[in-house]
Image 1 (tube, rainbow, N blue to C red):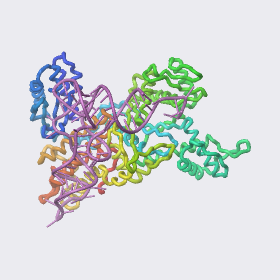
Image 2: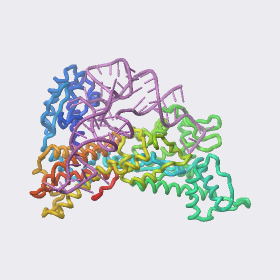
Image 3: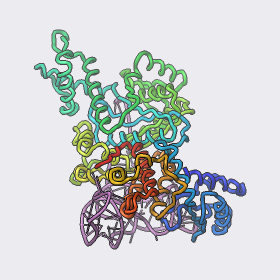
Image 4: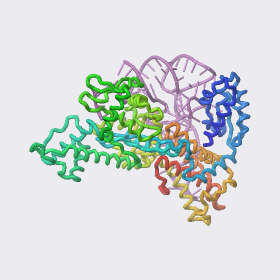
Amino acid sequence: MIITKLNKRLASYIKTLPAKIDRRRVIENITLGEPNNPKFGDLSTNAALVLSKPLRKSPLDIAEDIKKEIEGWEETEKVNIAKPGFINFNLKDNFILSSLKEVIKDKEDYGKNNSGNSLSINLEYVSSNPTGSLHIGHGRWGVMGDVLANLYMANGYDVKREYYVNDYGTQVKKFVECVRCIYLKNFGKDVDYPEDGYPKKTVKKVTDKIFTDNGNAFLVSLDGNTDVNLAELEKASIDIMIEDIKNTLSQMGVEFDIWFRESALYQNDNCRRILDKLKKDGLIYKKNGAVWFKSKEYGDDKDRVIIRTDGLPTYFASDIMYIINKAERGFGTLAYILGADHHGYVKRLKATAKALNLNKISLVIIIGQLVRIVKGGKSLKMSRRKGKVYTLSDLIEEVGKDAVRYFFSVNSFDTPMDFDIDLAKQKSNQNPVYYVQYAHARIESIIKNIRENTDFDIDSFTLDNIDIDNLRFETETERNIAKLIIYFPDEIYDGCVNNSPYFINQHVYNLASEFHYFYNHYRVIDESGVNRGRLALILLVKRILLNSFKIIGISAPKKM
RNA sequence: GCGCCUGUAGCUCAACUGGAUAGAGCAGUGGACUACGAAUCCGAAGGUUGGGGGUUCGAAUCCUCCCAGGCGCGCCA
């Protein structure tokens, strides 16, 4: 984490300055990183500009002092001051080279750090109702959640991936009612299909499966009438839907640690127990025959009903019990990925945590902007009720797991995505995923070529045998590649801190790009044989590609 | 009506959270395969960052007012 390290060192230098300035604020505003124009050097900082006002000195004067400080660092050289007050500097070649040793030492663990300190995180995402198949939008949260969890792990957190299954309540009952109709119809009994029922296509799929698996096993006689055992039918229907969802996620390589069922919250006397506790703590009250939660007192827009007049719990009641459940399981952080259509829950969740006095638990709520499906220039609704035009499963089958994963992980959570189905099919072969994978395939191809067509003993020339101390940069390109390699740990750290998995995509893309340039301009094998320095470099690149691919969750083909 | 979010090249998105000349990929255009894979590389072109005003050394980024779009505001889940 070289850049992070230098940032911290600069911050501690700032702390030696006169105390009358607001050092914390200054440090917050100072950046040290790569300038967007490479002509300014490897790294750059705006420290002097930020300090100018509080110190009431000209930035150029301040820059002189900071320049001296940076010149004293062992990693840096060629420190100079530019126009308004930027301080630009380079990393020493020797430092870059020796940093590469970390790759050799850590191998598949290179890039990871332990900043998470084994803190336990519960990350909940997707959590789509088991009343329909997943659509494109869920794909985004599935991939983003999975990659984010990978990132958390790479930063030393103990992550559990959790899917909350809403298998309790009226929607499920409604769904099963639809299944019942079609099921009975199979046995010649006509029952009116609910008017606002679920799409028959989905329901029929479920019913067919039940029919082939169980035949007439759910038929019972009620008061002389043929009907179904509703409880059994519900269980079977939900299981089938969950299985369907699991399969789709699995097609994308998204696997959860915990499938938490809402119905579990209502087992035994759990509900009673929690209501008693809320009552004891004075967090609920009765009004108009319903039970209300005092969420407004804790930051929500208003109080919320948790037990309806008819005695049934609301969705929010489950939420409260669920958050208590998670807390009781001992997590240090509860993280959620919610679609922007659920941003209304943020206040409610935070208010709940506050009311329950869960101070030791930090709540991380990530709001992801929605995926809009566009077809022929018009946007389509992904509504469950009207049936889906294009399911996630369709997409994965059409373009493949790697392309889907790259596509969904390449953007920030804040980006509302327009997803053009026709374009996606058309462009599946132009997905940037092939660009980064091709870099890997090319490296493998070089290795194969060396093994088959030269005397060079490639199989003994592994990372462990690379003599870094005898390497030097023959070209600027090689140096650029090396920099990208040693910045990789910074990306893992920053990506985690900012909840931005796409940092990894960007970085691996840049590395692939630099490599492709290198490949087209310089040769690893030439008439004089194998260039050991270049071979060493591409082996290092391969390691970073593999480590990045692992986090993004895509494969590393040797041939394409 | 109230609240949250978004608006950057023809299209899909970046811009290290206030930094230097706003960058990539598609599409389009001109080049590069008789040496490691052309799913690649090298050019040229493409912009008043939705619009106006403000804050300061410095604004795509912050504040404000318009314009356009998305999403939320149930004793539904």
